Length: 553
Image (cartoon, rainbow, N blue to C red; front, top):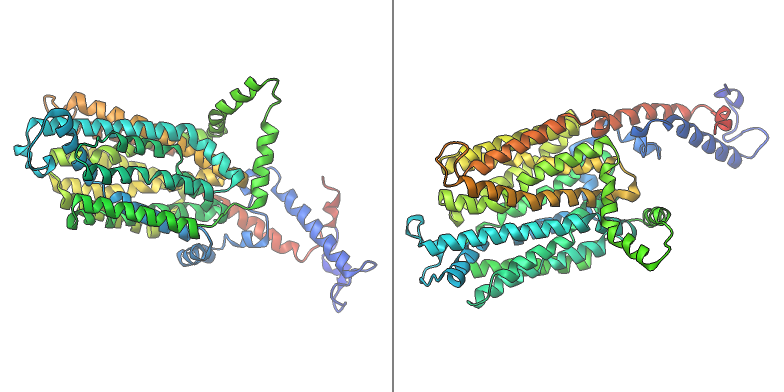
């Protein structure tokens, strides 16, 4: 083995700096750098868990616990161009969309009751007491729930078909234009919600159609890819958690608008916030994708494209491309397990979002104030969990156990929804449910950490596609369970809450799938331990000359 510097063969003690014998100092330094690069490459061969961790000394030093502290993470996050703007947009969008979460069921129920079932009362349906509502209002509520579930199905089906392709396009063309297009689509539904309250004969159908079409471009999945462009692997789970925290903060604040404003006032405020958010994104949202990553993604797509013998072959390839983009989910056992997690949890999570408000208004008499308080509690709990708890849990127990914990809580709170017999129990279950929100950013981070930087958009899009498929199936399936059990003979399996008991079972299945995750691939702190080992070798390399490795190929 060649000697270390300071011994024979290297610059002796007292020799002038940079003295390497017969060749100039600059050439010697360049040769040392080349040898050092080859040595690090040699060390990393055969160890896939350490890829992307040996690029430079700074990455090795990132395994230092002090640099991974919450304060260091937040400082770095705030100083990075892109993530703070995305979090602000999440907050504004959540305020805008969350403020109408109790308005839409009330407005649509009353409108369906009047247009389809002949209700002509002076008082809107949802302002009547539960015992004083005529049958027409109940039928209007059923129509509104069915329309909401159908719109959710179409929206999520569109996202399933297009999200992988949209993510792949963003890998080549950039994140910013895709995000702006998605935000533009999100303006259509709120605009019609305002219009329907200004004209008493307008049908609710265009609102639900606009909601369905918004699924064609999911800007949330692209925003996670944008975060991955500029955030290092071990900080991606808490960074994605901050996206959820932004939504949580918005949903915590938004329902109170419905308490102090009329339904029309809330709808107008929501639309104005969305328009302002879109303007802010146009002016301040940066592009996070670097040119090299875009070129690599484009080159990979071209290399994977077959030769076309006819125009029909080309069109067939284009039409089937969305399905091919999803094949990344079948790349390994890890990805298949993560896809199972996203699917089972997505079924229940989407139903919790789509049907929960209708359920508590109908079964427990929740009004605007009750919904505002519940969402405020859930929002504050979500912010605390995503900003403070998630980072510490990932550092201490790893992503795998975080997902197991989140899904176990998901099974618990859905069970509590199903067996609750008072508002207080619903409030408690809703508070506990905030812990379940740790699952989505953690799953997204694991997949992001296990693909190349040029595939971030593709993997996030494919994962969001699968979640959207679950979102399409979830409300329809749980709505079916509700329909066949709500008028049953009572008991756990024959009551309006049976659909949530079924949801608890699906979360239990997801918990088992999470337990099967390979820890060495799922946990970023495992990557950190390997980086630390190589960091010590990197430091040793600064003092020794590994020229003997020059012949290693």
